[in-house]
Length: 260
Image (tube, rainbow, N blue to C red):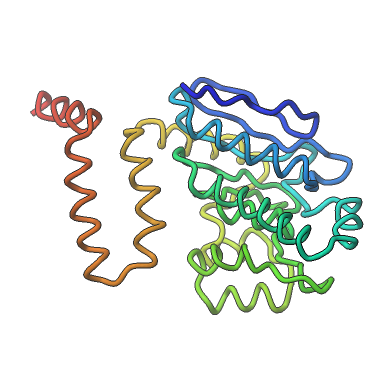
């Protein structure tokens, strides 16, 4: 069990449904936009949930029909006055959030309705799975106002490849859930009335699996992408050996052999 406290913010709700943590952005009047407080709160939340043995799956969503529309207007105005060191610190804080989600030991599902734009789209991109309904609109819109989504690009390249990443980042265009699915950004898209059911089905699939296997599998993806073929195979060999020594594997194998 984690001893790390969860932040108490009006703009961030955390509830538990059995072993599932439901993390919800709660600024509906501003389409769940981000400010520094919410970025830090999300980072702390994912770090705490990652360390909590009672949590098996995390679902990230937004209230009011939108996922997250990017940075809050007031925060953008504040950023415009930052100097170099302040901008570097601010950029590091957003990177810390992306890594807290990407490296979370539990599978993270982004449940997307409405806008997932700019930084909001970036947050969805680092989740393990994106399940979206037919209202979802994705967009890396930073180039429209003179910024670049450099941090997000690193993760997006791994997810959809260079061709699609260049298209999305250079044009800053919107894409619907159907197109997002066709390029591999979204794992599954459904009608609005099927979204809850579909997310629940994925949660059920994930919670049936070994917790240690899911954690090790998640960690594997970060390492394999930067290795040569020989190094990746050696890493995979060592990981296989490690997995065979886990309690989950021994219990699962014993259960399987008993059924034979």
